[in-house]
Length: 299
Image (cartoon, rainbow, N blue to C red):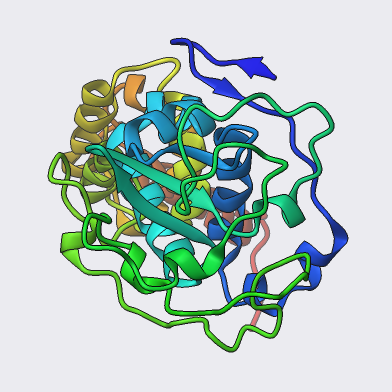
């Protein structure tokens, strides 16, 4: 058991081989599978935890939440909704407390010395050693929170390592705006943070966005978001910049391009090159012109 900043606790859990073989799990994208494993560390030894998106985020993804709380909460909420739709967790409410339970917990996790549960499982039991009556929450009671209705009646008597191993009851549901807490908007179409998108909007060359994002993250250790954006604006507006020779975003960021001086005037450079070319041409012509020999040439 390890503590995270702010007092949150995550627990050491195991993963059985059948997790990776499960057709139900295979229906989930990789990000959602990671969130499911995170929930296993978040819940107590009874398989129960508070259904609180902020507590889950700060326990399982503390650094992501610190760097970009809005996007982290949105993506986490969406993943949990997919997990509930796949009937891998039960979301319910007891005495006004919203809870979640990882279904078939005892078959998923072997815990030698389980601590006593603080919150009841959906069937009312508290102890890890007690069998869970899954039939009791197959049809959600009226006091259950949204999300439990996705469970369906799966019956009892199964003893597989994972519920629904053939994936037959996986529901493919679109994520609606109502699935997200009211404290933030649905996840935006872009997976990039807003400050980076602002910088990208102003930078004059749109190429290699993924690499540019990695370089931008590194550049933020050396400059503020506004400095990066203002630098991109200056570079885009530089009258001596040409599209052909505009730097790639990744290179500009890696070389601290926001600190660069304006580009040299193109006219001066061109004039210098023309003068040099003219001088070279004149010298070549002089070599071709024969010098007078002093002799009289007879026809």
